[in-house]
Image 1 (cartoon, rainbow, N blue to C red):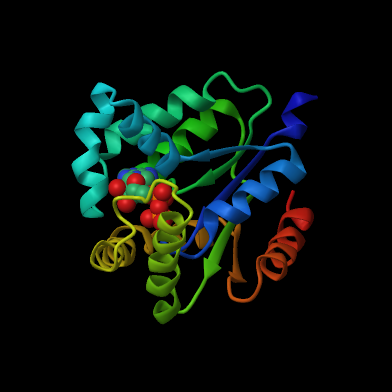
Image 2: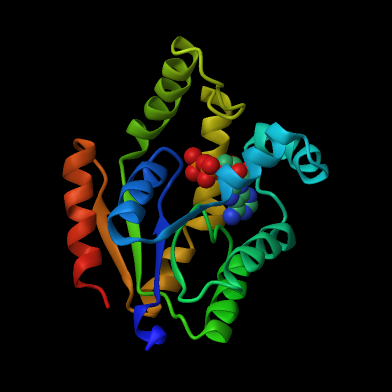
Length: 200
Ligand code: ADP
């Protein structure tokens, strides 16, 4: 039964919490496809596609890209997946996106298996993001347009307003687990793995 092998994991948490890094590792360990909407959008910007040109200023300002664009991107990625084995990093980010995802997953018969909320104290988040920008620059790698202190602060505000309410959305379905996102990458990963290995 392919149905039984569907697995859908959602990562929630503020910018800088480490969702991308942890999702990457979990995806490799569990044979899941990581879908990072930030990466997809940045790839469009780098390739200067029509979509990339449209969203570049939105990303640079730390604002959210319109819901219809994100929902179409996600639909494209997952509607032909069989089985549906996926980790979402950075999606959904608004109530409208969460509702659209619920519908889509229902159509596919692949409900959310686990939602992980990565928690890191506010004061640590901005520092992590600014440090990431600094390290990329020092290594001669491309620096994200939004990894500056000012835009990082804006991204935190957007998270609190638009995305944090989704915590309740996933709490209602009984699938949300809070995970302490402080400590080393290995420590955080071990906590997440424990959640995922017991989720069905
Ligand atoms: P972070 O979580 O550190 O902010 P991401 O790579 O997830 O980084 O997102 C970077 C930017 O991409 C966001 O600030 C936003 O402009 C855009 N973006 C990514 N995912 C979404 C989404 N689901 N809805 C709207 N905009 C998004």
